[in-house]
Image (cartoon, rainbow, N blue to C red):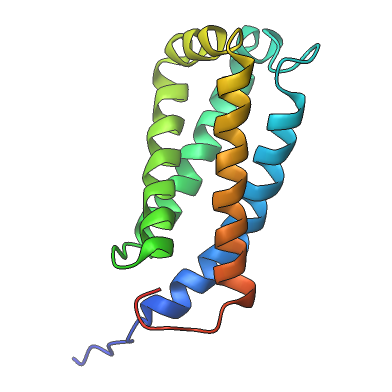
Length: 144
């Protein structure tokens, strides 16, 4: 029995993930930064209905595991960001599934601090723009 080995090009794999994750993170975090602190933003209704925490927890866990399974590259800024993003999604999904009250306490505690929350999400939007650049614009270079 022979096993065919397919060489994985980490640069191309990183670019492929960056093409999806970059625009997604840039768009979503920019919208969150603009809407945070507004009426009805992250309202209690999300945590009041267990279906939503279960659904989004499972989705986050699944997406995180997909990134973990297909992108474990740790050399270069973009690969590290993508790999950490996968672990972050998986951990956040697990916590949302298993301990939704912990996530709710975190959201509730951060809502009065609109300035720092907005700054964090704007920083994440810049990270998303960087990944978008890596995925769609940057010419392939070794290690990134």
